[in-house]
Length: 279
Ligand SMILES: Nc1ncnc2c1ncn2[C@@H]1O[C@H](COP(=O)(O)OP(=O)(O)OP(=O)(O)O)[C@@H](O)[C@H]1O
Ligand SMILES: [Mg+2]
Ligand SMILES: [Zn+2]
Image (cartoon, rainbow, N blue to C red; front, side, top):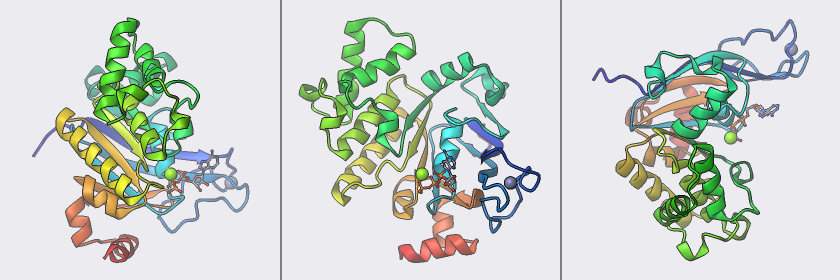
């Protein structure tokens, strides 16, 4: 299969903190400590190379602090990167490096080509706006201004994630955690992006609610053929969702490949530990 990837990322690195002569460059090797002993800066992501094919789900798994959220925040331009390149075929046929685009173009890419579901719903939703208003905001940002059309689209999106239309004017703060994640998903889908970023969507939810959200994600992927990066520290969630998986540790990718292969024959000791704890 020689399909062209939708998203190509090369050498993505992110250091929190100013750095010093000791930590100026990311050291290689996933055993290297993320925190600089001299200045306290943190290399949260170190030279990440990966790609996502159109319509596939790429799982990202790794322990707490391995850099998963930082990675997706960099892709969504929430965090400024320290180094690296990103291309998406949906933008200028993949010829343009996105991190060096103007802030105006980055806004365009964020609003039209990506949808984000944050680990922390407080980052993804205005808790005091109505739920329909939260979706409207994303539609506005993409240049839709017709009130009737916006309401209709918001109600069909909320209906798609099984939020009763009768509750579309309620603010997310009145919703349960699972409902808030579903509002985030509908907002992320608002402009038909080819790529969704989902950061720990099921974490902290009851098992039964978790299962429903997983079903919803699978249905959406099948229906809309949208590509997704699904981040979870839970290999069980990744097993149910991801076609391919990458395993992160200390800001590095230690292993990536077909999810089935990684589960059956993990190569890296850290992955072996993860897989065995799942059994
Ligand atoms: N705004 C920030 N400023 C400084 N350091 C940060 C910041 N955000 C994250 N970090 C650090 O970067 C590293 C990676 O954090 P990140 O949140 O990306 O991990 P994660 O894999 O998403 O973890 P979790 O599974 O707990 O969500 C951690 O050492 C964290 O302390
Ligand atoms: Mg995280
Ligand atoms: Zn340092």
